[in-house]
Structures are given as structure tokens and as C-alpha cells.
Length: 328
Image 1 (cartoon, one colour):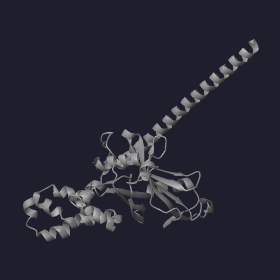
Image 2 (cartoon, rainbow, N blue to C red; image 1 turned 90 degrees about the horizontal axis):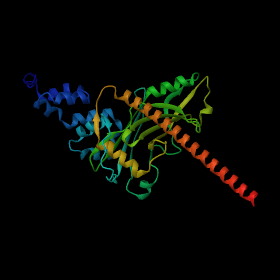
Image 3 (tube, rainbow, N blue to C red; image 1 turned 135 degrees about the vertical axis):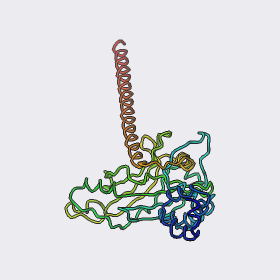
Image 4 (spheres, helix red, strand yellow; image 1 turned 90 degrees about the vertical axis):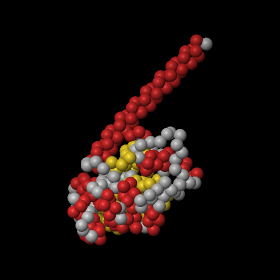
């Protein structure tokens, strides 16, 4: 094959053949011969594939960061396309203190509805000691979308939203020249927030070794509240919140320093290209939720036992004190 294809002009191969391939196929093609490896390493090919996969990276800040990667867009694609697998450093390892970049694309039924790049200032003490949270939308900002709540069966619509929404949340470390797509791509859950009434769609990566969850949460609601949507007629749906946070097994947000250690582990970790990884991620999330429930129930039983012991001790002390008074 190498000898036959080498008879074609390189420009024809690159413009008519290689440009029609996706990233994984292009990488496989590069491994067939040294000649094709040279042609497949063309930076423009990987740039077009990367920007086609993640429109948000056309931002100048991301372009500048990618330009410093060992093999440019090829390195960036190799980092960001597969799923991350956590491999952890020593517990004594200091978390990264350099600024990180978040590059986000949100899709509904294959249509891009929001794209944004935001830098994270991670060096100041306030960030390291405060609960970690990255907000892609301002508090009063909402995204106008073509999504509509059709009215009628709300639960069926929630299932559709969970299946139809897709999120790419890429974290880039410009100094260490690494990137990782830390979201689950497809949603792992969708439920209504009892306080705000918004539908919260969760894209999650469970970090088993740290008993933690890296969660990207997208909140959808009407222009004001869900109360304004007619259950029969329906109404327009807005994306009102998009945030990244790292939670422990209790559901509490970890502080910036601890969260950065976990993000660093994902950036430095191995990558997984197995088929069905999205389904496995959802299954791992469901198992993790089960562990959280068991842990919460165990904690409640322990606290109940402690309360009971305190009551018994207090009652015993009261009886002893009363007996002492009577004896006197």
C-alpha cells in the first residue's frame, strides 16, 4: 500500500484524501507507513480537525496556548479527544498554581448553542482557600436557545434533554502544555432543582481514588422561572447557568487547592479511547451515587447512635443527681 499510494502527488493525498478523515482515522493512517506519517503530521490538518470538533478553540488565548504544545494541534487533539483516566501523583505533590483555561462547547441535538473560553486565575490565596467553582455565565446572563419545552409530559422532556445535550469542557494548562476534556460529553443525570425550579443537567467524571466528582452542571429554565411555563402549551427554554465544581462524597465543594490537585491528576493522567466509554462513565456515576447514599445513611445511623448515647448519658446524670439530692 505504501508503494502504491506514494505514486500519488502529496498535495492530492493531503487535500483530497486526508482532509476527509476524522482524528482517530487520521492517527491510524499515520501508523501505516513513514511516508503517510509525514503527510498526516501536517499541522493544518490537525488544526482543521480540532476546530471542527471544538469551535471554542478558535479563541486567540487557546490558539496561543496550543502553539506551545510539543506537536501543536496534534498534541492538543491527542490530549482532548480521548476520555481522561486518573493517575495520581504523590500526596505531597503541590497543586498547579499557574492559570488554567476553560474552553466550553454546549450542544443540543448536534447544534452548537453556546461556546466560550474563560481563564482561571489560580495563584491568589483567596482562590486556593475558597470553594472551587468556575462560572461560564454571569449571574444575570442567560443563553437564548431554540430549545422549547413542548408541554405535557415533563418527565419525558427531562429524559429527552438528558439524551440530547452534549458538553465539551476542556481544561488547558498553558505552562505544562497539557489539555483534558474533563466532562462526560453526554449527560449522566438530569433533575429539577427543588429550590430554583431549574432543570440541572450534569456531566460528570468520577474520581474513584479521591472519592470525588468533577461535575460540569448546566441549568436550564424559562426567562424567569419554570412557573411561567404552561404545562400544556410549553415555552422557550434558556440556559441560565453553566458551572464547573469538584465535590466530595458528601456533596460539598472542595476548596481550590484540593480541586486543582484533582484537575492536575486528570491533565497528567492516561487517556482512554475504548468504545462505549460514555456509557461506562454513566454507570460509574450511578454506582458512585449509590456509594454516596450508603455513606450518607451510615453517617446518619452513626449520628443517631451518638445522639442516643448522649440522651442516655444525660438522663443517667439527671437520675444520679436527683438521687443524690433525695439522699441528702
